[in-house]
Each structure stands twice: as C-alpha cells, then as structure tokens.
Amino acid sequence: MIRQTSRPPTGRCTLPMYMGFLMSEPTSTTCTQLSEVMGISHDSVNRFLSRESYEPRDLFNESMALINPKNVILSVDDSVLDKPYSQHMALVGYFWSGKHHRTVKGLNLVTLYAIDSQGRHAPVNYRIVDKSEGKTKNDYFQEMFHEVLAWGLKPKFVTGDSWYSCTQNLKMVRKHLARQCCSGFLFGVESNRRISVEKGSWQQIRTAAIPEEGCMVWLRDFGDIKVFRTQLKDQLRHYIIWLPSPEAYAEFGRESFQQLHDDHWRIEQYHRMIKQVCHIERFQVRGRQLIMNHIFSALCAYVHLQRMQINDFFSNAYRWQRALYTQVVRAFVTDFSKDRQNLNPIFAKAVNA
Image (cartoon, rainbow, N blue to C red):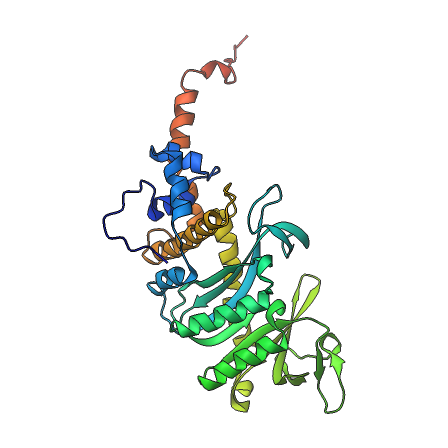
C-alpha cells in the first residue's frame, strides 16, 4: 500500500517523478537516465523502487477518481511484456504471446479493465503471473474479480477472450451477475466447444450455422446462451452471450453485440498504450519488488494520461508524446543547417549566347 509516514518524506525520487519520466523519456527508461535528467543520485531511484510496496488496491483507488464504479463493463485479458534478453530477472518466464503467435520470454500481465457509462475507462486490478505460486490465469481472474466486487465495483457486463471462458469462470460470473440483477456477459470461445442446437445432438461450434443476428444454443455443462460469429482476416471467431431473461436475448441483436465487442477491444488499446507510451516493458532492474513497483508506476501513469485526455490537455497521447521533442529537434536542425550552405545544390544562372 502507499506508505503513511510519521514525518515528511525525504526521498529525492517520488512516484510522480518516476511516472513523468516513464511518460516522457523516449528510449532509455533506466535508473541511470532518470538520475541524469533530474540531477539526483542513481541510488535515490533504486531506493524508491525497492522501498515502496504498491498494491493493486492503490491502482483501483486512483482509477476510481476517474470512472464511475456503477454499471461498468468489466473486461479481462492478459499481455506478455517481452524480455527476450533478460538474465536472472524475477517473474520472467515463457508465455504464449498473441502478438508473436508463439511462446516468448517475458512477464505475463493480467488486467481487469473497467469502462463506465460515460465511456471513461481505466485498469482496476492486475496481477503479474508468478509460476512459483502454482496458479493459472483463470485463478488470478477469479481472485481479481472477487476483489473488485469487495472494493465496491458494480459491473453491468463482464467480457473476456476465449482463454477465460472455461465453464468454472462462466458459472462464477453468471452467479454474481444473476444475484446483482446485472445485464450479462460476453466471452470468446474456442471453435471446438460443444453446443446443442437441437435437443439430443451435439456439435462443435465451428460447424454450426450461425446467422448474422446470432442464435440461441445450449452450451455443454453450462446452459442457454446466444452465439455470434465474426471473421478477422481469414480467421473465424465465436462469442457467447449470457443474458438474464428471454426478453433480453430477443432485444440483443448484431448491433448490440458489435457495441459490446468494441468496448471489450479497449483493453487491447490499453495494452498497446502502456507499452508504447508508458514504457512498461523498458526496465533493467532484476528484483521482484523493484519490478512490481515499476509496473505499478507505468499503470498509474496510464490512468493519469487518461485523466489528462479527459481534461482536454491533449486529444491523442501518442501525438502529445511526439510533440514533447518537436521544439528540441527543430532548434537543433535549424542551428545545424546555418553554416553548411555549401552542401546545398549550387545554382548556376543560365547565360544567353
């Protein structure tokens, strides 16, 4: 948790300083670089990363200053933070990467991401997969889901990809949503999941004839759901919708599915932004606590970028970050070009005979 001290802290490196550094440094987000930029010692940065003990609840509290906790769309997904050249680094292992379409070396970040009724969105819980704990990503999802409920989050819909659509997860989410009279859930499913269109006959979902508006089927070991099919390039994908009543199923058509699917896709945009703007992958510390504090700082930086965008500080975080260096580059190019006119093409005037 964020520390409460009995006297004013004297550390030169602080969380806001480290967050600002992650958002603005273009390439080398190291302790050495931060110490040179801010005129503090390398040890000050290292002590900050090793001394603090931030937890997911701290991130939740920051996000709640941005979004409304009632009637949110809650999405779950994971992403691999690539560390292909790391040696003796805590929490690094081999995980399947959807980006590389193979197993890669890195850290696996699992996130719960919330979107409120006004379209504001932020991460509300997270885990770094630690193989020494013997837990699966589904175990982490269930832990995080129960935590955010206990913290006061009230989801309207829950969404996730096929990795999180095991029967145990589906029943757990249904049990909570039914108890809270919420809307339902959307999960991707693998193409070999077995469904029954007609009572007594089972088939894999990929072989079923699914119309554009979806169709009602019975999912094995679960119950009634509505199935939709999409196509991404040459790949067919299947999604299941659970809703609390037959009337809700009748009203939930292709347009409603597409809107909910687009909302779920925001978590993919979040993954890209924390890597490209918040530099969550770029660290060179090795200890577990130092890595965890770096990751928390990057996620907290993302929340504050969202807040800056809502307050019209900028409209696009990528463009804003590039603009930080525009004046410096322009000044250098202008100064460099002044006394080097001899390198330009020589213009020879035409001579009339």
